Image 1 (tube, rainbow, N blue to C red):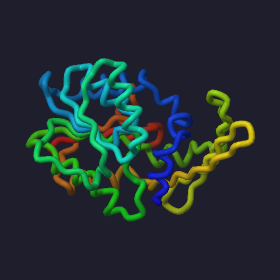
Image 2 (tube, rainbow, N blue to C red):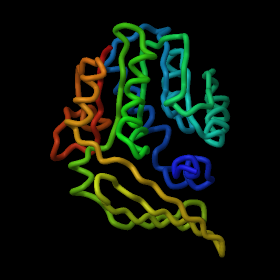
Image 3 (cartoon, rainbow, N blue to C red):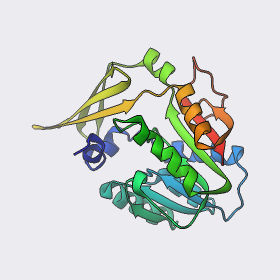
Image 4 (cartoon, rainbow, N blue to C red):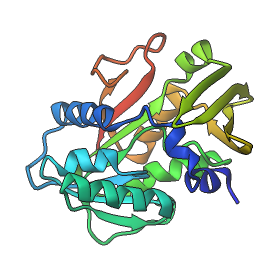
Length: 243
């Protein structure tokens, strides 16, 4: 089984990323809305939606949201969260690389570093091509990825947190062109271990791929506050591109 299928289906995933909460999702949704002009009834595709926090933030704004993820566990959580929020979202179980729809979208999102999991670059970049194919003419694509240059300089080798009685240890390292994380989650005598391995794409690699795919890059932001991207100090690379 690929590491991401195992990890995203585990109970520990949402514990490790519990700091990536609804407040952050609202901030990013608002940032997207400030930089993209959409009709009130626009259709949105959330590619690799996880527990649905971005989908819910956009559905609250009146958009028709379709959200796709390969983890049934995360989709169960997303449906529960949507019900609590009082919004309707069309959740679909699928690997985003294999997802197809006759319906085309006004906006496609790939947020929170949701490519780069795969061994081959053509597989990772196929997600960008999929977004292009699923968009209407003049539709927008938002790609949110970590900034390689910033991450390499600021990598925290080890961190330890406690979440609801679980002791979570994360050990990070750079191996070749990937950032690798070994995760241990311990509670009482039970210990579970997980693994992440994500491709370190540079700004140039991502921007070149977007352009080759056919996208016109309209703006590049460097964080969720909306600051313009700076290669040396920006924690994120947020591309706003148009088909």
